[in-house]
Amino acid sequence: MAVEQHPVTSPSGDQSRIHDIGYRGYDGPRLGRAYARRSLYSQSLRGAYGLGRSVKSKVLPMLLFVVMCVPAAIMVAVAVVTKSKELPLDYTRYAIVMQAVISLYVASQAPQSVSRDLRFKTVPLYFSRPIETADYVRAKFAALASALFVLTAAPLLVLYVGALLAKLDFADQTEGFAHGLVSVALLSLLLAGIGLVIAAATPRRGFGIAAVIAVLTISYGAVSTLQAIADVQGSTGAIAWIGLFSPITLIGGVQSAFLGATSAFPGGIGPSNGEGVVYVLVTLGLIAACYGLLLRRYRKVGL
Image (cartoon, rainbow, N blue to C red):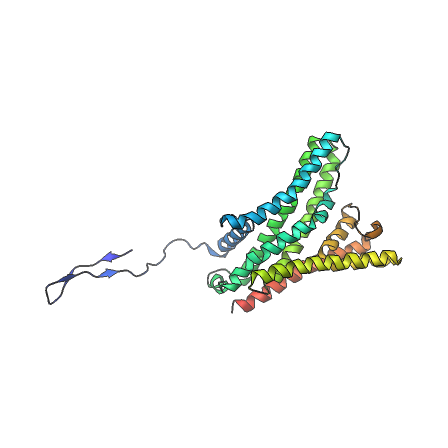
């Protein structure tokens, strides 16, 4: 705020005024790293659904959210009208069936979360404050994983509430709902990590979107094709191991081994409990590897 000083009289008799327009120091409380990390997480999570941004930015994420929930609502309506004894689709299968929508969401929002910071070179500005590289990576990772969990868990909640309204068995539905939540939580962490690693490799959002779609689509298509070939040739023992090479089939293997889900692998041949342990270890290892790669990437960017 300008501070007016005493008038100064010039030799010609004119009066001039001197104003102090310098910046004033901040004497308020210093909220520290935790507050900065929470703020970055909140801002990134809101941005994943276009909140606080333009109307144009809200269209795609909100549309994908609706697309995820509408089939669940239809299934509930069918179960209520037909008085069915079970839902048309298991909780653990829903995300696998809707994988195209989930992949599109990851491809659109992972670059939005990190590419603009890289493109406009604002990342070093974050690190000039109390926030550190690990704080930035954790906030971005947690925000996208949370956004994905909201996207994938919301239709499961619709199914669960509808099943209870249809007076299906409470214990069975609660167990299935819990298994579904565990499955989509793992899927959200894995896809968030993969999406952010790919998006952080380029400051161009378009390239990031294309790369994420390519990785998720090609890996699933290649694995499904190889599994089908192995099934036709009678190499059933190889089907479970091939499933380790795609994020979607990886989660599918975990839930069929430990969460009571019906296997979507050719011939219904899912991994055994021993193979399921490998699936879990690979899933957790990939999540940790994605976090480590992001740390390494942003340590270089922040220099």
